[in-house]
Length: 248
Image (cartoon, rainbow, N blue to C red; front, top):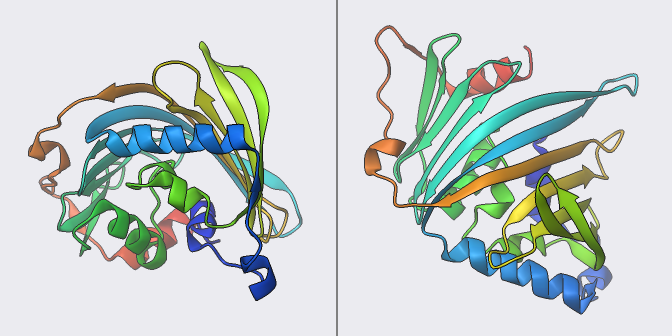
């Protein structure tokens, strides 16, 4: 199954006629999404927590949800670290500007690959070539607005809603490949609170959901993103990592 985020990044347009039709987006929704994008793009070093729900549709149409949590660290323009906990075991992704490494603590396995020199390029490379996606990766680009709007045909503002202890603006967007919703914190910092994507072209229209919290602006030291294989760890190829994640 293709990563749900990747559909949004691809920006596939159904036809030339559709491509020539400008998105119909309510001004308030557009203003808030741009404000959030600017806020995120201006954050040079930061960390946050996520709670993720990944939905998979079985061959007989049953929807199964997998739940995981992650801590995400970013240092622009070219460093990322994500630490995941969940039913598949703990896993950490390291990107130091030159290489991307994935370490599975449960099995003491790791894989490393050379990747592009910027975070934007590496997110694309990891999705297309390694079947790896960071939690809420569309929000980590240097210009999230540009990425999020690639497939959009309409968008609207739905009002204020609580996400945990935060009041958030609820926006809903429709596209050719996906429908998605985002909740943006009300207040001095327009940070994303919740992000939901529906993959309309996938059988059963599975959903991906990520809730973010504990945002913290900080300058992170280089060692945060450096990976040194633990003693006794076994190196494998990324194709094996992808197959293991799919239960093969």
